[in-house]
Image 1 (cartoon, rainbow, N blue to C red):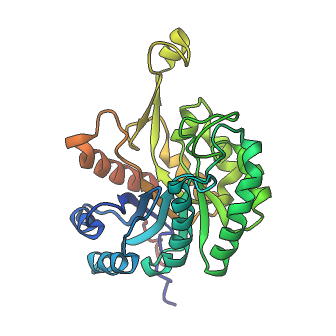
Image 2: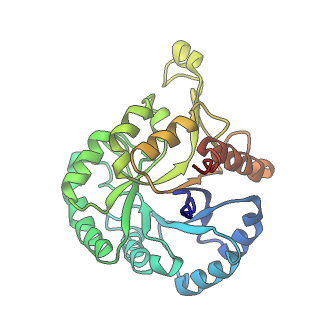
Length: 302
């Protein structure tokens, strides 16, 4: 009896700026490093980008590889009513409607929030904007995921996002009761608030549909001597492989929770591996995460 070929359900990739001049050319340049997936991200708006042409160009760039487009991302504040905020909300619709052109079924971004208001105060507006978007996405077979970045916000106030702590996630999932609504999770955003990311990973793994590959380093000696609001910085965003997290444990917990998707490296934050060393750091992270995922070895025939 012929064995069924093994299919890896977790891919390791990176983020690509969708607003740059030629995302397909960029993908073509870095694809030989071994990236398996690419998350196309947009800041606040998709602008006048022709998504159909972009998708066609990217498809050509990926020819001959098994790499995929894991998600489209729109990172802005779709809950407010400024010009860019309204464009963000429209870009969510555009991403949902066009994700299939890229072969993707995930659209990611910030949840938004009412500026200067608390997380509970933002829930009614979140429900107003995202219930129709969640239904629109579900009808098209698309998942909506919220990144867990606080963007400098707190429970009481902020400008961009409310989806950054477990109590907020529970409120969001209650307000938008669709099974295609989940999280774009990473440990970094929890660690820099001195939250242990592992218990929440175990609890919410079933709602994590996309992962950002970003880590953190905590200087506990600085915390003990200066506190978290002192003169010295105590936490640094890091590219995976350079931070404090054990990604073997993270990937194991994702597998236990049934995660099938991509871990896409979010670079451009590491204080050391940036600038001329950006791709050096990202390729190290790629190989590190592949090692943490482990390489498939076929069992002997019985």
